[in-house]
Amino acid sequence: MSNDGPTLNDDSFRGGRAQTGHTHSHGSGPDHSHPLTPGQHAHARGRNGRDQPASGGGHDFDLPALPEAVDVFDTTLRDGSQQEGLSLTVDDKLRVAEQLDHLGVTFIEGGWPGSNPKDAEFFARAPTELNLARATLVAFGSTRRAGVRAEDDETLRHLVEAQTEAVCIVAKSSEMHVVDALRTTLDEAVSMVVDSVEFLRANDLRVFLDAEHFFDGYKANPEFSLRILAAAEEAGAEALVLCDTNGGTLPYEVERIVSTVLGGFETQVGVHFHNDSGCAVANSLAAVGRGATHVQGCVNGYGERAGNTDLSAAIPDLSLKLKVATIPPERLELLTPVAHHIAELVNIAPDPQQPFVGASVFAHKAGLHTSAIARRSDAYEHISPELVGNGTRFVVSEMAGRSTLSMKAAELGLELDSQAMASVLDSLKRLEHEGYHFEVADGSLELLLRHSTGWEQDFFELESYRVIADQSEGNSTEATVKVLVGSERIVATAEGNGPVNALDGAVRAAIGAHYPGLAGVHLVDYRVRVLDSARGTGSVTRVLIDSTDGDRTWTTIGVSENIIAASWQALSDSIVYGLLHAPVPPGPIAGG
Ligand SMILES: [Zn+2]
Image (cartoon, rainbow, N blue to C red; front, side, top):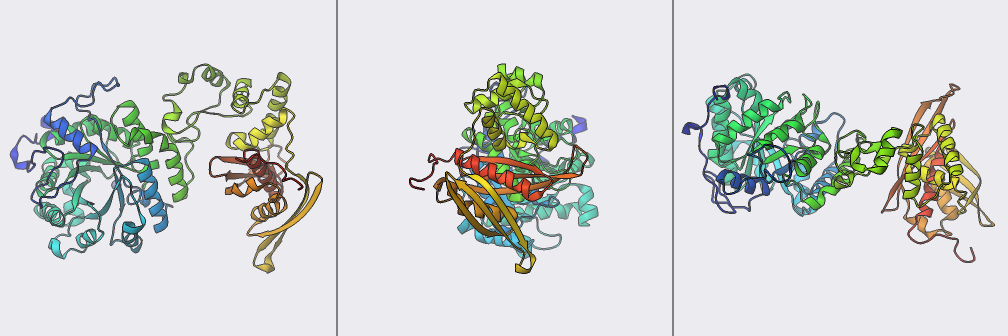
C-alpha cells in the first residue's frame, strides 16, 4: 500500500458520516434530504456490506466491489460543448436536455450560469420550458475565488440563482495547479472547498464536487488531493468526483487510486474522464469495477481535444456486460436513436464507426461474414444490435454476394429468382462504379430490388422538368415539372430557396392532389458530394436526400455530372418510396 499514499485509515482525512436509510443528510449543511439515487443506494449497500454487490449478476468478471447501479451524469451541455466546432443555441440546449431525459440519464449538467449569456438564458428558461420526467438538472460552477468570502463570490451567487436542485462545483485538487495556476496556498485551496460547499448546502442545494486534475495531482502529492476530498465530504458534498482533466491516466492507475479513495471515504465516489489516451470508457469501467457509482461523460463522447467518456459506449458496457444498472433497461434501445438525434441537434455528422450506435458497427461487408451471419447472428456480433436500438445492416456493394441481397429482398417480402438476382448484382456493380453508394441509400436500393422483379412505379411519369435560378430576384429558384398521372397531363411551377426545394414544391403541386399521403412526407436533409469519376472523364456529383414520414426515415441517391439531374433522381426516388409506404394505400383519387 505504500505506493498508494496515505491509506486513509487515518482519521485526519475523514469527515464522512455513515449513510443510513433511504435519505441521507450531508455534513454541516441544513437537514436537507432527497431520495437516494440508484447509484447512491448501491453505494450505501456496498459499504454497509448488507448485500454482496452485483458480482454474479451474469458476467464472468472477478470484481467484488462492482456496484449494482451507477448514476449516469451527462455533461454534453457543459464539458461536451467545449468541442471545437460544436455550438449550441439555447433552443438546441433545451432539445438536447429533453433527449437526455428521454434516454433516462440521472443527471444533466446544463452549463455554467453566469459564465456567458447563453447559459444564463438556458437556466432562466429551463424552469418553465424544460419538463424533465426523470433527470435532475445540475448547474456547474467553481469554488469561491481565493481570498473572497463565499457570500461575496459571484460564481456561487450565480449557482444559487440558477434555481436547480443540484450543483456541481470544480475544485483544484492538484498541488501543482493550486500553486502555479491559482497562485495561492494549499490551505487556502482547502478552505475554498469547505466554504463553498457549506455555502451552497446552506442554500439548500445538493452539491457534487468535481476534483479537477485529481489523478495527476494524486500521483504527485496524494495527501493534498485527499485533503480536498475530505474537506468536501466534511462540508456536505453528495459525491466526490475524481477528474482526469488531462485525460492521460490508464485503467491500471484508475483501479488503484479509486480503490484507495473508496477505502477512505464514506461519500459516493464518481469519475470524470477525458479520452486523450483513448481510455476514457475503459477508465470509467475500471473505476466502477472498484466501486465508483457515478459516471460522468457525454453521449457521443463530445468534448474538447479527444473528448469525454462516450456514454453511448459506457452505458451499454455497464448495463449489458457488467450487469450494472445505468439507465432504465427498457430505455437502452433508445440509445442509437437518441445518440443520432443529439448528433443532429449539435450538427455534427454521426461517426459510422462509433461503438454500439454507429451506422456501420453492425454492418457486414465481406461475403464470407454475411453468409455466416445469415446462419448465426451471434457469430460476428458482440451483442444483438437491437438491444441498443441499432440494426444489423447488410452492406450492399460490389463485394457482397448473393446471400446479402436475398436477405435484403426477403426483408422486403420480394422473391428474386436467379435471373433477377444476376441482373441486380450486375446493376449494383455498374452503378457503384459510377459513384452510387447503396449502402447509405436504403430507399433507392429497395426501389432497385423491386425494379428487378419487373415492378414499375406508376404514381407519375415525368415528361420534363426545368429549373431557373434568378439572381436578380433575390436568388430565388423556380422549377416547372410536366408529369402524367394516369392519362392526365399536369404542369406545375413552384419557387424555392434552391433547386431541390423548388423541384420538390413543383412535384407536390403537380401530384399532391392525387396522393394525399404525400403531405406526410418531408425532406429532412440534403447532402452533396463531388466525386472523382471512376472513368476519369471529370467529376460527378452525388446527392443524398433523407426523408421521413414521421414514422420511418429513408435515404435516396442520385449521381450525375449535373447536380440538378442528380438532385432530381434522389428526389423522385424519395417521393416514390414515400408513396409506396404511405400509411393510406395510395392511388389516384376517383375521377382524378
Ligand atoms: Zn472535463
